[in-house]
Image (tube, rainbow, N blue to C red; front, top):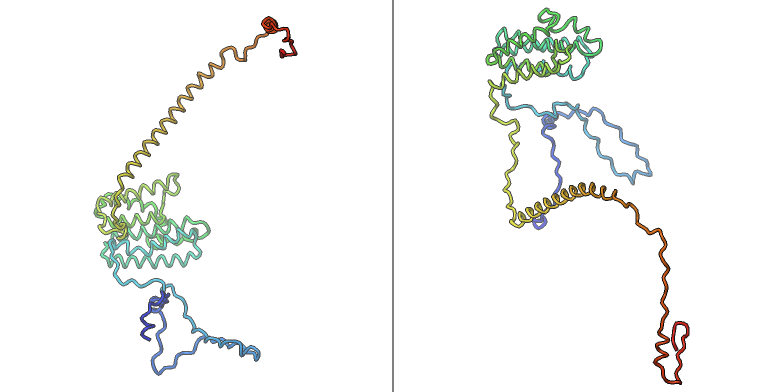
Length: 349
């Protein structure tokens, strides 16, 4: 009815299907084609004659659910990624393998991981060549990546490092037993000309960040040496590559809010309270200072003689009470024979 439709309805919770789940949902069958049967239909529960009239009819079984995929939780990237350093973008997958091995601190299947590393290194070579990287820089970058993974893998606990050393990435790619020493030589050559090797310096900085240590592993101040090399790369690039104008988080600024003016009386009260607090602190400080000085004077006064109460030891003369002449004076004044004065204890009658 129109009157019922015009009434305001209370707030309700509306459940909407997720767009990610809808993107991966199975499309409905075409018209004229029977729908596929469900994978499993549970048998209906038995109905007893005594309870058939009391139980409500059961709901139909839910349709079979498809396997959950991690791709359902991550929406696809529609905008192309802006690449500032094509060399780092090409080496991202190989660096991810190095970081994963460093984080796990173990290798469960060395041959499989080694084969995957060689595959990713070849993929990096193709991507870097397509990005226009020269032959010399390509060899340097491949050497840095291979030496980084070998250095991490050969210094993990367990028996995997021994198997890795015989067929390491550097051995298969360059025919060398260990590539740690040459890594630092290449880095020093790049630091000599930082303006011409910006992308390469960023790659070497990333190799140090994921765990390459090399010859500094056996030295006592190895971590400090690594931090010093990373700081040198950062300082070399800071004066060349300007900071991007766009903020990392565009919404980092707060909402501008007008400041409420403070009442004049409130300022007076605050000033008066501050003055009273200052006077109280000054009074307590002076009292404590004077009490500390008086204590020394009182300690000296207490040592002056006599230190006990003074008493007189000798006995004095006894006190004599003079005799009272009041009775004689009264008798002298009485002239009548009918009146007689007598002393009765402490009274005269």
